[in-house]
Length: 288
Ligand code: PDD
Image (tube, rainbow, N blue to C red; front, side, top):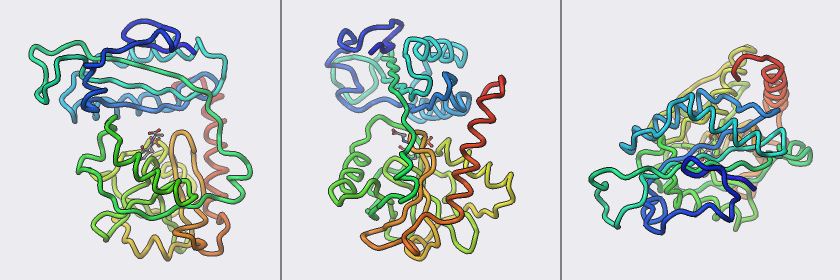
């Protein structure tokens, strides 16, 4: 497997970073996960804009321009055999003697990009939906930054796995739903698609935006607002989105069925529209 590290394309076993890297020591860095369909990075401009937002959020100069990133990512895509891939892009504040304060003068950032084959959710998963738990959102107040320091998210996801589920739906202050440990969550009630606002308490998902755009284009009513905890438990449908899972129906919550326990009509419509959107976009030679 070839990865990109600091200007070089290397076999993964030859790619090395210092033990003093601030990513390793402090989790001091940011990342992106970008799906690639038919060898073209999906919504690349939006992913790179979010990367810029994350870099700004941690006061880290973005090491590359949009054109430079595009060239690096395309060169890595070309070195992998799968047409559909997902790119993991990671930038840290670089290697320096351990000190919480930023290094002065600044050191070179560490830039890593990896690619893996992208496998969409199986038909069985689409037909059955997935099981989730609710969990306390105990993360910091800058969840809009896609930071590599993911320990709370890792523990929250593991809480779901330990319960035989795929994801934790996070509840803030025992009052309202924010997102999943690594996904965005939507509630459907009375044919209205309801989603939390893109504020500092959730990651502004690229797939979240795509789903809302598709819904708007097809006349599906939507509300962007705080989603009360109680609404999660009385939803007609619950949906989950992410770059790697696209859109999935959540059919079990805390061991109980969501409505009748089967993927609902809104899921079926949005999933079909998402697939059509992807196919149409991929046939279109303009940027995705
Ligand atoms: N995670 N919220 C969180 C906390 C996430 O980590 C993710 C994605 C999302 C969905 O964002 P998007 O639609 O842009 O993928 C929401 C990625 C997939 C990951 O960490 O692997």
